[in-house]
Image (cartoon, rainbow, N blue to C red; front, side, top):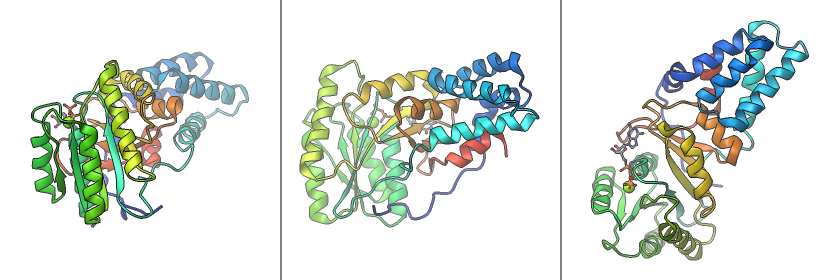
Length: 307
Ligand SMILES: Nc1nc2c(ncn2[C@@H]2O[C@H](COP(=O)(O)OP(=O)(O)OP(=O)(O)O)[C@@H](O)[C@H]2O)c(=O)[nH]1
Ligand SMILES: [Mg+2]
């Protein structure tokens, strides 16, 4: 695979540290001074920090095992056990890097429920890709909401990305088709397809999404190279249910965790990977164009257990 991002975007110091301060500090403290009786407390803290039931069970089982084997004596030993286990969950494979086409345009489909940050994330990602020397086209396959097309067009102009619009009320799959055709003709490196927000309970809109995906697959072999689901990090375990529902319609390859600058709890990163195997690839940290980071497993784990 070719690489779209040559260098890692500059990391805002302290993102994960702040997230840890919000909820994960407790996990660390409990892990540091644990004995048999406080395993229950560890479990509670993990659940409160959005790790979800499966990951929480896996981690507390591992902690219990370490205690039983006498391996968790000393305050750092158990934290190390948990750190290793979390890193293992997050690093099931090396799919964290954004995929790219071998030749021809790389196509990313961006999906999610209403208002989570899809359009903003498309703009931020386009900005990042343009800055790294890629030619980028953004396609507004959101023909549903009145302001949606204009919102993305304004971003595209600012960023220096090509823009392809659809007719208000038109067929979003046709917009995607037209964008891919134009990108092939112009030799564009990356096409980002922004879609309308939709609730997974709306069958008509989920069918529409299936059609967009089908059209993209038919137009360019190997596309979409990424189907990124944007999640509002502040909704906690609801995010897990959204991923569960969307993955029945499209094949999700990665998560964009938006609004991580708000009161989000970091355990959701682990929950998503443990329960669906879908890695968090990008993290939104604000409303501005620069506020996007690639997800770094080591930075995350270090923040949780402080190294
Ligand atoms: N604080 C913060 N706000 C964000 C972030 N990403 C998006 N937002 C804000 O969230 C709101 C919704 O963002 P959009 O990008 O329009 O969301 P959307 O998913 O495209 O919405 P629909 O197309 O209506 O479904 C806007 O006010 C954004 O500025 C983020 O990382 N941090
Ligand atoms: Mg939008």
